[in-house]
Length: 216
Image 1 (cartoon, rainbow, N blue to C red):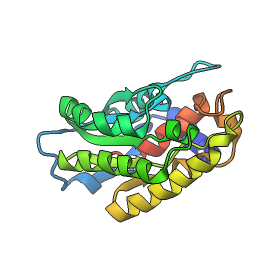
Image 2 (tube, rainbow, N blue to C red):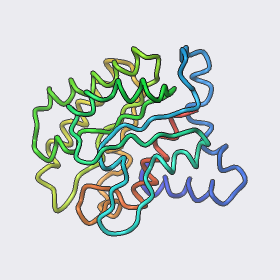
Image 3 (cartoon, rainbow, N blue to C red):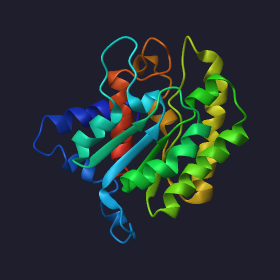
């Protein structure tokens, strides 16, 4: 769904008693036969950088993990870490999963790598490692392409787009649930804060709705 469609859905759900039901049609019963082991299928961990943590540079913005918890009524752990690259995310993924034992892991990372134009192969291998860490622990990984990067950081747009394309390929290769955040946002800069990197309140709502659609 594009930005305007995300808001239409959010507005409809928020104004009716069917708020939760609007998002129940996403992941739904597709996970009913999945072996979660000793993980809590009603718990979600969101792994990422400052976009996940909830950084703000202009207007107050509610983090997308908080929004997902409100939408789905699931327990959502915000494991975002400002300034983190995919290397650090991959290194701590196992510890985060072991300490929380979630049924689902949301993976939105790579923006700090894009800013420094780091090698795409290394970035994708780090993300592959995170997916494998989840699967090895019977946690369902849900992978996302990057939130588009805009002015004044357009120098990172090219790497971000390359990573997103490679993430799509990785999701298809590993048969992983994919949220195409790049397409969800499109080219509308109105969904980003003044730094061209972090989503504003509107952008945060788009991320939350897109991920929630993949959850039970």
